[in-house]
Length: 136
Image (cartoon, rainbow, N blue to C red):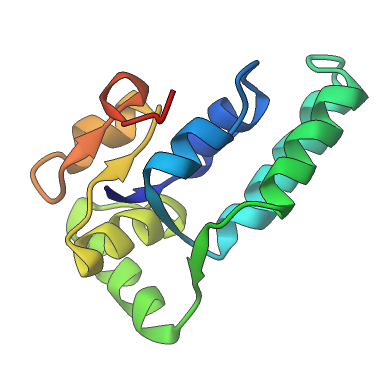
């Protein structure tokens, strides 16, 4: 299945005991390029706070580095994200980039963010971790 994944879903998979491979192997994954800096930042922050070990952060980072996520960073996506943010009354376009990409690709959005899922379910199909195919 072709999926647009956001940072919340990606982080969950990257730090899970089974790792990223089952989800990555069973799906074509897409994301705005921003996902790379978002995940790197969260791994750094959660390590700094002592919420995860340096070793787990390193494993997650290298899983991300070696992943097959297809990223998008064209200006058309940013314009679409501005339109989604305006439509939803959002001040920022961070989440709107994921939604805009899902809309462009006619692909479900894979997220663990319940607020985001509720807020965009009328625009795109939204999947959570229990809905996503794994090649176990």
